[in-house]
Amino acid sequence: METPALQAVEVKGARIPLLGLGTWDLRGRTCARIVEQALRLGYRHVDTAQLYENEREVGDGLRASGVSRKEVFVTTKIWPSHFLPPELERAAKDRLVRLRLSEVDLLLLHWPNPRVPLAETLGALCKVKREGLARHIGVSNFTVAMLDEANSLTTEPLVCNQIEVHPFLDQSKVISACRRHDMAVVAYSPIARGEAKNDAVLARIGRSHRKSAAQVCLRFLVQQEIVVIPRTSKLDRLVENAAIFDFVLSEAEMAEIAGLARRDGRIVDYSYSGAPSWD
Image (cartoon, rainbow, N blue to C red; front, top):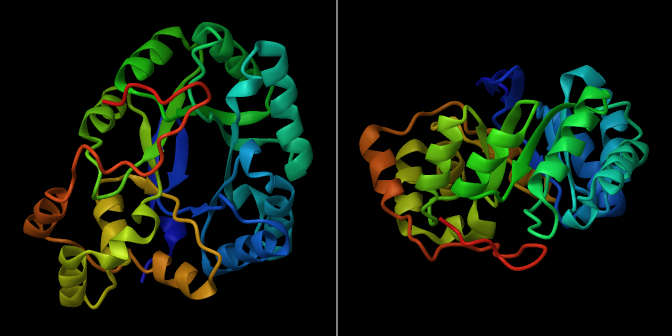
């Protein structure tokens, strides 16, 4: 079986491992331990954020793993209350202090903030990249219109849009926009916060491959070259989530899973000043 580290999406000079570890809501020793275990298992992508208040523990787990820093793709995100240029620059530096890293691989705007002109925020984000604090930059929870605007304003490549993606939510419009702008799609909540485990279609397809419904769910996404960052605090789930590169879903199976998508399947619907008008 190929290890997760061998599978990646390459866009605009960034090589983003297809499987990452999401760390939302992980705290303290649990967070550090699960990051360490994931990296020892072969994960090479870890996602955190200013909002999560666990960057220090993520950094501790990275160092405890013994895996070389240059082999691990570290993503963090800046919260919208820090989108004014001076605040964004301070927040970016603070991320590195907490992680105890000299740079992150990917720095994202966590949610849109209509209170601050996007041109100003992106200008500061691009400056942070030029100063070497982040190897790559991108956005999260951006709609089609926001992606178009961001790409027209930025002076540095935007390499991804991190959004909620799973089989129960129709994200076809924004995924198409990401492809058009040569941006990777990074899926948070890729197992729909456990909903996938209870789906009969995913379970049936899983049985034919000797896989779980959750593994089928993740395979459905990575087979479309969508990066997945499932969050877990359990070692057995880490192992299960990584075992998605040794089977292939047929075209018929992919189509059947795609048929589960619905417009009202969103789980996360929050932003700094009201949810965006979703596509």
